[in-house]
Amino acid sequence: MNRTQATGPARTSTLEVPGATLHYEVRGEGPLLAMVGAPMDARAFAPLADLLAADHTVVTTDPRGIHRSIVADPAQDSTPELRADDLARLLTHLDVGPAAVFGSSGGAVTALAMAQSHPGLVDTVVAHEPPLDELLEDPAASHARTEQIIATYLAGDVPGAWRMFLHQAGIWLPDEVFQAAFGSPRDRQQAADEHFWFARELRHTTRWRPDLDTLRSGPVRVVVGIGVDSAGQLCDRTSRALATALAVAPVSFPGDHTGFVDDPAGFADRLREAL
Image (cartoon, rainbow, N blue to C red; front, top):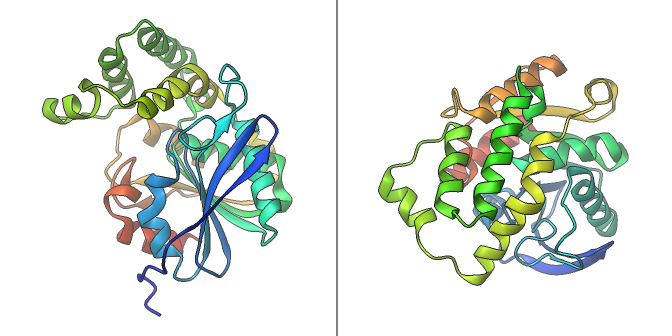
């Protein structure tokens, strides 16, 4: 089989975990590869997962509180530790590990938290552009800007919050692209997911500080991935700080922060090499 060939529809199911019902999808056969985002749900990874399913069992999931993964208490915060525990329960349920875990953005933080707390379930973590503000030279300033973003969103200025967020991230969008993405009315699900991320997930994800000693000395191999087009962006800087702290060379991936969406074929080839 051509390794770039898709392998048919995903098998979908749910799993009950403490405080939530997780939606997850399974594709293909072979070594287990879990792919996680935060706040991105399984849909963002589907084209990449289809390609990698040619030679892997690929698991994708909606993180708790997002889209199809329903939480019992919408006021409960989503922390990296809690999401790592969800993923550990999912991989234990599937019973086909140990797994490689690819996480992007907040999902990379989830993957690193899992490497610390559940090292027996994962052998490799590919952390693609984790927003680890705690590793910056002045984390307090970054945290203050994040608090301002959250407050702006909760006050009802959705476009304003997104403009501030993108500015902090170092991501520039043409005005027409920004308006199409963030200036138009949201449907009910999109609005709910967005609110959960700003109110319950963003703060804990960006404030999480990895246990660098545990990651350096533990059994899990950590690969730090950075988009070739992300130079100078916030997650480029946090990822390079993580790679330096772990004494590993960062691995370049196609595109920028969402390179796996924009170029799934090129990204799949690079991820296979990294694994």
